Length: 230
Image (cartoon, rainbow, N blue to C red; front, side, top):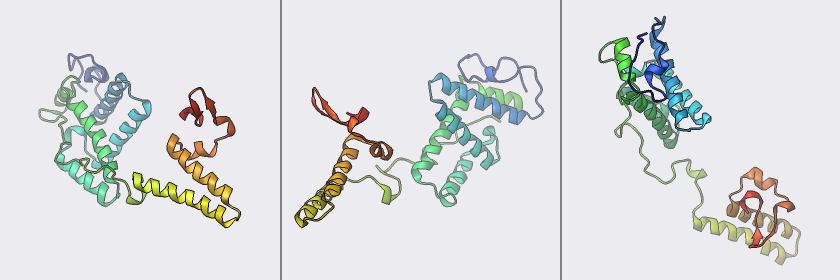
């Protein structure tokens, strides 16, 4: 692989910091890709991104590489179109999921094409003039955010009106049990209260199931809610 100084910038993720100088690689294409991924990890780490985020993005790029069976300097907008169609028609991913993938992959290509990191020059020196990464994700082949909620319709958040009707129904079950003078009034009251607590303090299911008397009390400002939400 070509050695020497491939760029003047010493920013984290720069090509000349990741490429091995004076070494002839048996598989130069694979070596270049690995250097690019190391550089992107370094660039993201320098920005303070969490390791989980960096790792997830790297795995996505590797899956994209495997699916296309093309190197980043040979990617085209047509490849993006083919991949997007496959994710929608074959994998049946939600639009929000695909858009998230497109955003992360776009960040990778923007990193490779940013002149500060020197990957365009490195690729041309190694693979020939004109063979270098280009921007292949743009507004014409990526999914835009058009709706407030893009998940499954049956899993969407309740509107304020629907939420109020739900709380009213829970309260009605308490009144019905009391009027009927039958067992279950206390359980209905417990459930109605728990629903409101979960909503008011944003509790997860596990957090709600582990509530105890010690999580409740009075403070100088009045009633104190459960745990860290109080």
